[in-house]
Length: 105
Image (cartoon, rainbow, N blue to C red; front, top):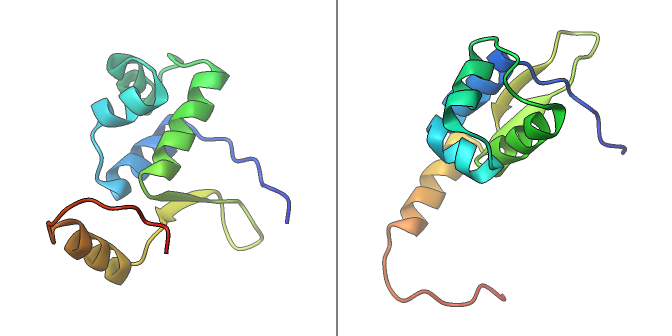
């Protein structure tokens, strides 16, 4: 299945960031954009280039957002990549402690 191009506007970026539970600073650092520019974009400003918007989208996906393309049932949207159960399991695994090891299972 071919990748679907989704046009992400500021409100969709803001929604994705909030669903992912990640700060604007973290997304901005990961996407290599200024935090102030990202916040302006989220408020409807034209402060980011198309390449920067693509980097922000990739950062949001990295932190757990999944963009949903427009179809016959509704418009473009965003949801969590992981189910609530998966998130709880991941958080449990991450807080177990112990030495860090390779993950080649």
